[in-house]
Amino acid sequence: MQRFIIVLVIGIALYAILDNDSDFSESFSPDSAPGKGAIASASRNGAIESAFQNQQSNLQVAGKGVVIRILSDDNAGSRHQRFILELPSGQTLLISHNIDLAPRINSLREADTVEFYGEYEWNPQGGVVHWTHHDPGGSHENGWLKHNGAEYQ
Image (cartoon, rainbow, N blue to C red; front, top):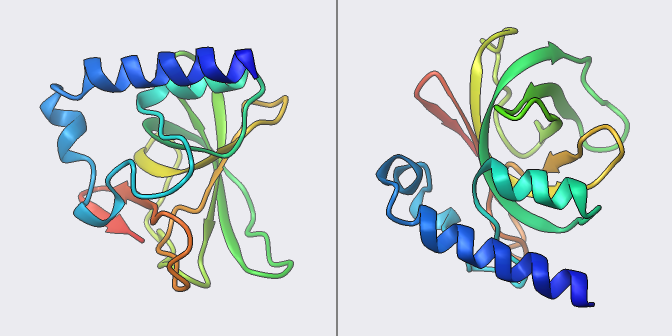
């Protein structure tokens, strides 16, 4: 519990510091602004790196990375487009984008930059971000991906 409180305080402090960064502020769409759900909000890649180090999950995160590998779709159950991003720190992150609920990024290529907003889940390889789409049931915060000026949600 104490670790959670420390990480939450760090996340809030990072958000306060980064809140004045206009590039970051412009990356949120009105329906995906932090603080709409019960999930603790975190911001930027630093929060993802902290969550990875502390083995935390269920955090709403925003960030940006470079595609280093495009994986085959996961077609078991809901279909997901999957690819691996490298964050500026060198940490890797699997993006699992539900293509039954949101459009596929057909033009995605290695070395492309992708911005994201979704839910982080820890794993030993760097973590997974999912919920990068709207929630048709309205019970989860909406997420998104941005690639080449287009938003996918």
